[in-house]
Amino acid sequence: MIQDIYPHNFKNSFIPGLKADDDSLIIHFDKDGKLLVNKHGKPFPRLSDLDERPQRLTYLFSMDEDNIFLAEDEQIKASDDYSHVRVRDFRRLKGVPKKSIFEAFTAKQLNSWYLNNRYCGRCGELTGRSKIERAIVCDKCGNTIYPRVVPAVIVGLIKRGGSRQDDQILLTKYNGRSDVPYYALIAGFTEIGETFEQTVAREASEETGLKVKNIRYYKSQPWGVVDDILAGFYCELDGSDEIVRDEDELSVAEWVRRENVVLQPDDFSLTNEMMTLFKEGREPV
Ligand SMILES: [Zn+2]
Image 1 (tube, rainbow, N blue to C red):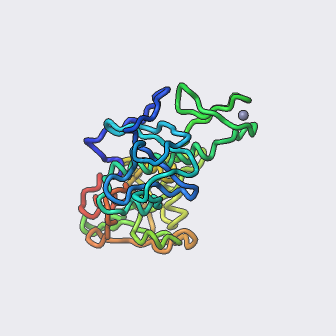
Image 2 (cartoon, rainbow, N blue to C red):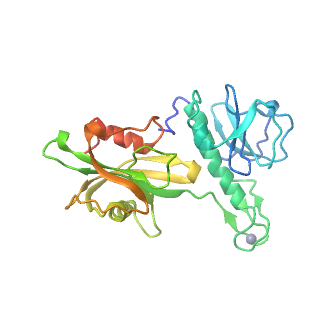
Image 3 (cartoon, protein in one colour):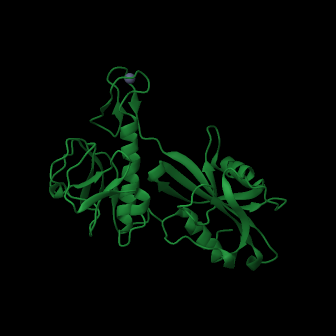
């Protein structure tokens, strides 16, 4: 999965007063949210690779020995070796190490948070940055804003057959996502006041009209590009297997036997890992 970057060491703790130096890696998103990457080889520039030092550099996190900073300037001056690409295209470029994709996803989340909180939501004043922790602060009214992570679930819903070979899993495809032609699992955001298990049951019911039982946690995955933390659950069908598809949300919802599960082309997502386990008969019971 995208976060499985061992032996690399990701450290996200805030380091007060840390300043960028020539070796710092620089991540920049343009106004359309596209990411600055090198066209050949190492994806992100070091500060010394840029034609001009950005005005506003904010420490994000470190990976191994590299300190990674966000350039918050609207424009950035870099040579023709660099261009801005969509993060989802960057993810599919050949030869980009997984740790760089994880860095891009995580930086994207922090970039959105900084961008969306330039003004205080409580009193409307321009905000500033805390010097002691990763927080945006309003000096006028005292409001302190921390990064928010949005919880969502992924559901591996299994219909048990007479034997393990006869088991089937519910696979879906989302409407309006022609850029993602792959099968996925039922998924959805946790609503306020809801447990993860309740989200699993509600999403299964809303998207397919199915009831579930034996809900059990599998693993989680940060997915910073959309501010998420995903929690994966397996569960079993309870009662009728008749699918009533939510046509607004899904273009496909169908029961698929283990041998017929078509996997995604890369190993980044928790969804794909959960589908892989089912395909190989290794899902936890
Ligand atoms: Zn305020």
